[in-house]
Image 1 (tube, rainbow, N blue to C red):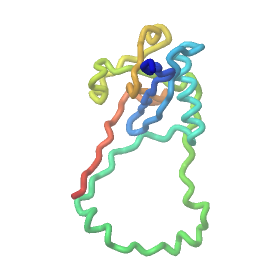
Image 2: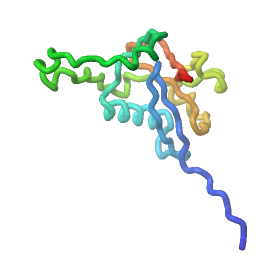
Image 3: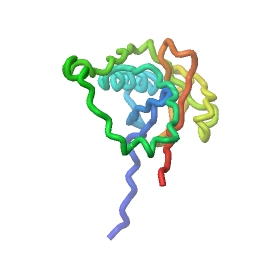
Length: 157
């Protein structure tokens, strides 16, 4: 029996990040249209279909006594009952347009969380070859610059 031939992947997976927000995009290796337009169009679609772009997350203060507080029972507020179930709706996100977003690649592909980004356009992205889980930063038109935050996990023992 002849050996099985390896089949090359037809897509690559990209992580599109803004601050603490991450979207995953599967990108065809031989797209019918330009990679730049495909990334931006897909990103706009993903953002709008997932409820819109949220404001950048602020740093949350770390609570040293969190383990102690987990056992405390928190009473339900009577005020919540009076307002009804619609009072807890999250604020809707911002629906974005193609021109509202910019994308960038890290200067050093091995250190994307150093936040040294090169903004790209259709011409500069044409010669780029992506590999799975490459990080591409994006920013909204109102954002001052590209910024991503590495996920941090607290290991509780």
